[in-house]
Length: 240
Length: 243
Ligand SMILES: Nc1ncnc2c1ncn2[C@@H]1O[C@H](COP(=O)(O)OP(=O)(O)OP(=O)(O)O)[C@@H](O)[C@H]1O
Ligand SMILES: [Mg+2]
Image (cartoon, rainbow over all chains, first blue to last red; front, side, top):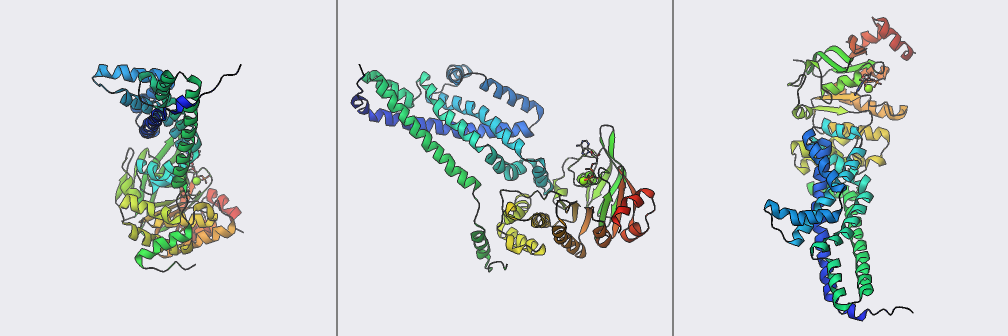
């Protein structure tokens, strides 16, 4: 005998889903921004930093990559109060997700840096740039281009992985879905809806990364560049 | 006062001394060609002169800066010493203008309009004014190398170092790059150029240095060096190049 699906009671709880979705976007969005910043800094330390700092970076990466995200979330949530930091579940969740992504993305960024030929770095140094300026202006964009697919894959994992923070009752979509389920007793329907929302979110995030990649890696139209560059100083177009 | 002076410099990788007591003095407006077999230490010498490699002994005086073993802050020196590499090393994500403007903007804080003007000037100098918006992979090897030269020139260097800048080019493209270098020489730029183009060395360089096994084996006015080599090593090195 087939199970009769009833989405009605679940869809009546649309406001809960909307709230959950917004919270998941905020949670992952902040986690992604902070996590990437951590990852970039750690990657730079790993390729340029002094040995002792590199050791610390390696330890951080290994610890994060060899423990489950859920355990990290618990450790941040229950552990931080012991060092005097009393944070809400939501804030703890952002911190845990940021540090998790920081470790994974650090290794991805580092792979990108290592893919750039040494001769490019030497060309930057020979022009008088500092090592950090060379990274900033010469290395980062080509390196990002190399690892962009790997990076966006990792970001998708972060978005979906953010669901585990429902374990500490941080507000996000899976927690919202659990509440709807307990109110409606429509488990399958509830999580089908939640799943559909996650799929949609994934597409929206991926579309955003694609837009960012266009902005990062796009090429200026040469003709427009000449005009744009030449006009402000009252010059005609460069003669061919 | 010489623009560049190498005082007994030593550079070793473990037991192998790639530069074994090099003395060289380059006057302002000198064009010095450096020739020698593969592995004789030519590139290493250039790389020591702008601090891409550390020296282990001796010292280098270059346009008012001094490099000794352990010298670290070389940025002020590199602002005044241009280097062009065999493999061009243009930055692929930047177009020609951006490649050229990067160092003046970032290192010297030159305002954008001024950097732009300089970019146009140096591009004209290398004959590529129409390529200002092109990306490196849209240019031929010879054009890329000329842009690399322009990029160095934009920093208004006092000395230019060229490391086999035509070795990756076919003969026709080699010609256009050598023409650019010859024009720089005529304009009075102080240059040290490692080259395998004997004819060019003879023509453009007023002095030529022959390196052999990490030492300067023979040096002198290019004309004399090529027409009357003193050492058997140099004789056998240039013999196949003379028709
Ligand atoms: N990082 C390094 N470690 C060990 N040995 C090196 C290193 N770099 C260069 N060498 C050695 O130093 C010697 C000189 O190298 P260099 O590149 O200066 O020669 P070169 O005269 O420029 O040769 P070519 O004409 O082939 O460019 C070579 O024997 C090379 O093997
Ligand atoms: Mg060489």
